[in-house]
Image (tube, rainbow, N blue to C red; front, side):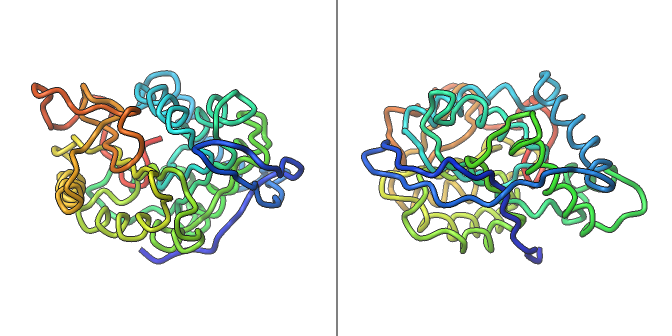
Length: 287
């Protein structure tokens, strides 16, 4: 998929040093979030917000959010990247519960997502973008979607994350180029759900993670919808000569490469690697 321009949204005034994970983190200077969301942004935002609320109310994938939050705290992740944010529900949860203001470790929360539909007719999330608003191009919807995420979660009242949030309207591979090598504590990968896409994610993001940092793969057990994820991740684990650990071991989900082994678990032997029952398949984020 072609990349799109980068949109950075953050509020000013929270720059500073923060300890954690054995290193000092300097929060960069901020740029402002959108101050309003009108017209197409408001129309798209109504659709996005409705689905975000639905996920949070239990009609989606929110079952694993507390475990991901706990993991971020355990590894003391100051700089977190979410690849594929979709509705922004996981981002909202993490911004409300895992940032420094909430007693957590996160100083920077980056979203990398082109918010661009039409990439795969077999993927339910790809089709969702068509439903956001009628008679608009995917590109127009993409711009409005990203603007709404920045407005709603950055300063619009839902999360009010301010300087902690940055939204990059980019594909995973192009977005990774915005980060220096060994500068990120954890990358939550929920983007392209194909074998080739996950392989590209690993190649793009592995150098960006600091020594001891984590690559986290959502939907690992979902072989009914996305068998390529498990194949790509298993190959990388074998190449590294390591055993996968899981944030959600009973479900075999949110597989982790790297990170503190005390913060994730080996999967129980009886756990079955199959499509999970929590919601439907999706490509650019299930959050």
